[in-house]
Amino acid sequence: MSTARKASSLELFFQLARRHFLVFFKNKVRLFYTLLVPVIIFCVYVLFLRALELSTVQNTLHELGISADATMQTYIDTLVDSWMLSGIAALSTITVALQTNTVAVEDKQSGVNRDFASSPISRNVLIGSYVLFNFVVTLLICAVYLVICFIYLGCMQEFFLTAGDVCAVIGILIYATVSSTLMTVFICSYIKTEGTMASLVAIFSTAVGFLIGAYMPLGMLPVWVQTVCAFIPGTYACALLRYSFMATPIAELSGYVTQVLQLAGGEELISQLTGSFGYELRFFQTEVGPGFQALALAVFSVLFLALNVLSGKKLIGVLGVVGKKGKKKAAANKDAAEQVPQGSEGERQEERAALPQASKQDAPRKEE
Image 1 (cartoon, rainbow, N blue to C red):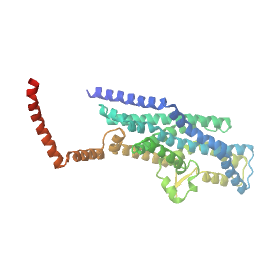
Image 2 (image 1 turned 180 degrees about the vertical axis):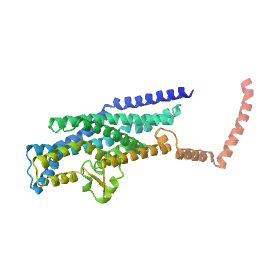
Image 3 (image 1 turned 135 degrees about the horizontal axis):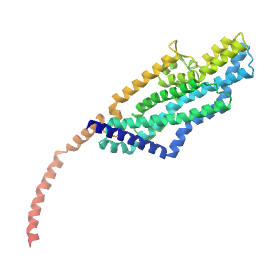
Image 4 (image 1 turned 90 degrees about the vertical axis):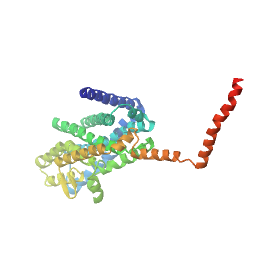
């Protein structure tokens, strides 16, 4: 019997997830906008910010008295592009996951979730269907952006990633998507209307790019802001993606500068470049390596998973079930309705007493 129930719950789980997919992809405008967000940021970088970042590196070379040849300039271009593209990839896992939660908010506002809750569907099955839907959609859209990045690097003759690097990028992207999904589902569980959700997406998407270091190195921010950034999972996801994107280009540039060109300030150049681009992540005056970054991201994922489980009342509210506050409010309204003034209650009793007398007087007339 328990096996049959598990099979039935699993079937409902995938049916609900399929329903969420159909609702999301049916709205072409929302799908287009969600897909367009990382592409727009990518185009803004290529058209406007790329030249600014390259000029920063040129200033560093000028200060060290180094003149870059064509090969060295290619490595530098690769380094700059890899730094920015990896930051946009980390940012996309958060912004896309946040926008995908609009389906759950719309279901709540329209009352669809209340229909689900009134049916014999487990709360955990319903919540899990939203989480799975969010994860898959976010991963698909981020994968599309990742393909665009690889094509861009190939067209610019800057694709130095090995097969291991590509596998690492894909694995970290999946890892970051899990963390972003759990975090945004928890945040959006407190959202009740589409208007509030739209405001949250606009504000959060703008601020989070700076807070995770996607737009500028965290070292350029005030110390207290860097401390705040240490408690954002996307910061570690961004650092991990940058490490996987930039490890090979930095190694190639370092080998070319120190071994081929044998520049006197080659090691200092590499140190300044890695420091200025925020390649090395530092918090509380301590350098955080890739291993600790992955561990921190895992801790945050487990934390948000626990918060989603423990905040069951809010998650039930998202699904249209009346929570504790709603029950108290309904009980208060019921008590207020029962507290009727004495005079009006007495009048109602007199009216009810008069009704049988009137019917008795009318009875002989009906018999006549």
